[in-house]
Length: 302
Image (cartoon, rainbow, N blue to C red; front, top):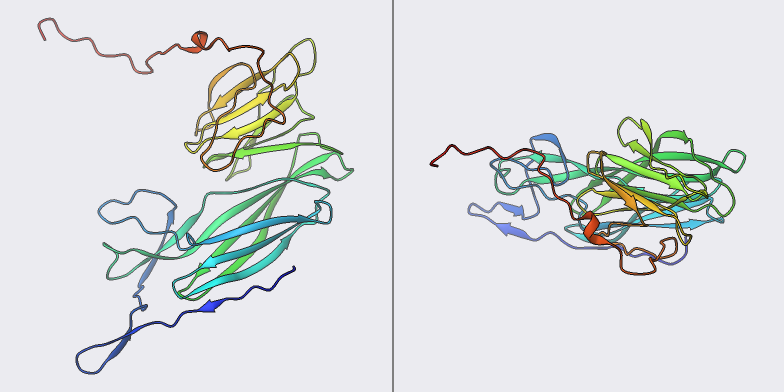
């Protein structure tokens, strides 16, 4: 790894209390530990802050996409800089990378009701190798990344926890697509006419999508929005295309013609594999609303 990384440490301030006792203001009491998913609602108290919310992890490929390096940088209460680094791989060819939703431990102290504290964040890292085995296999690698954050440092551990071969086709010049919500991964390549929905916990997989036509219609994009809806599109710059939308529970919500996609709030959508309609799409044909729960009839006179 090139470059020099410098960590600057800040000094804790101290308070002089009555009686002459000196107490650092950064001290905190912790008497119990519970596990909390990020963003989960907590009744009767303030939501705890993710302990690594001021830290970030950068990734880079090297050795012609056969390895991935990672570096954790940012700041803690008393320091800033880069705290840990490591490498993932080797792979035949790393085609896609995504992080899972973090979970964290809650330190329960005397001030828990107004200022809950956390010190450990755990998340998965998912890597798809699209040149596994003989060079055409596809394999999913699952890593567990743990950040133990103190006032002055972040201790990071990344371990390989699982691998699973996927019934997809890879190979030279393969384009791999992956998106996710809190519960599922959606993975596919441009050499296949279907994609996979994979449960993040059990790694059970289900084949999804696929359109028939006078010519093969290959996967062209997988996109996700911040609410957990995932669009899987097929076809590209040819005449034929179609899409499916899945809800946050992995159920199909809509399907139709065209290379439709959903847009998130952080990463832009590339037009590399998305087709462009010749004219204005017939949006009116999709404007149909039905109630999932029938409205109750009111009694006469009410």
